[in-house]
Length: 110
Length: 112
Image 1 (cartoon, rainbow over the protein chains, first blue to last red):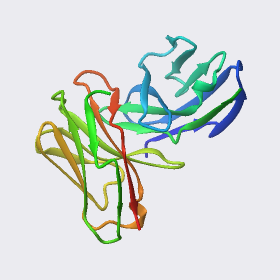
Image 2 (image 1 turned 135 degrees about the vertical axis):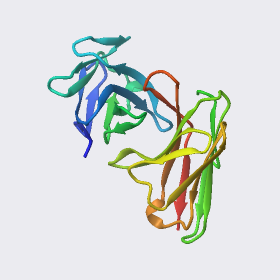
Image 3 (image 1 turned 90 degrees about the horizontal axis):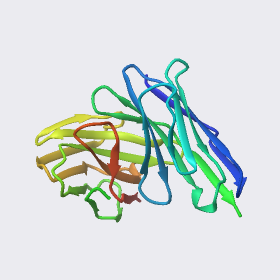
């Protein structure tokens, strides 16, 4: 059975801290790994990674994929209260589907 | 917002009643998806469509059916709602190239 596991399930940090969110996967026909941010509404797309070792970066957020060890990390530097959200990891499979992890709930305290 | 709307946005219904949720998109996307989101489970795929009248089941399809008679509308029907179907339902589209999906605003369904 295809599986995507995120850790930690939740964490609380203070503004300015750096956080690392983890996503490991076991899927049969891996094609891509995606990160989403969800703030009390619909998930919004952050990154898609398809190649190992190539960092994707957007402002204070960055992500990298390791296809040998089957995991990805999402880093957020200099966290702000606006980063508080659920972060979802999903794996794209051959056949147009995404398999989602349960998410990491991040709370940034001021 | 990828031009996706969902209706209704909120619904309360009684056990045993049929319910239909609508997803409407304005940009002619071929791929459309229905997910449910529950605490601790992330997003789970119910059904998806890869064209008019072309649909397939996802991992949690029991108790749900879908129809897609035109490109812009993808309907999700709960034939006889149960309390276990209380959830937030999201519709999504996928661009023709790539794997990223874009989500509608969601429908909060409560079955009492």
